Length: 209
Image (cartoon, rainbow, N blue to C red; front, top):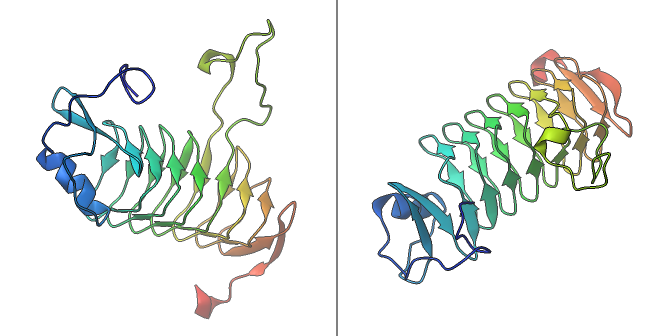
């Protein structure tokens, strides 16, 4: 969020909604009103109100559907993907086309989601296998003190509600992760896994693929 945002100063005096701002609300099935604060940054618009926060560096493809109460920054969302309420998607995340990300999920930096992927409610991704609040000297960590570990979710995979996906994991094409699972290692294509830690149960029958 640029300086002078919600927590760092005053916003402009209720400027008239721009076309891009109106289009953003159209994606969410809502209508802009004069009281919605907008922070302009050159020709880009930062949308910040009681419903959502969408940074100017977010790339939204055609047909994306956004619910209220979301936080998006530095990410890319593919065509016709639907993002549910209370979802946060961090920078350097790519979500493919025709995906569904259900409410209350958290997709952290370093995650790549391919096309037609289903993410259930309350799914959490992790990008640091050894997280710490502070560096060796006792000061709060910055981005320079740790390395983002990547995660890949391949085409048509499904991740059940309440699952946690640890770092350095690949979830294979068409795989299914059962609800409440903790995925600690790669999941093969067409495999069904579940549990904590997630274990292989069986492969998806040919007629169900």
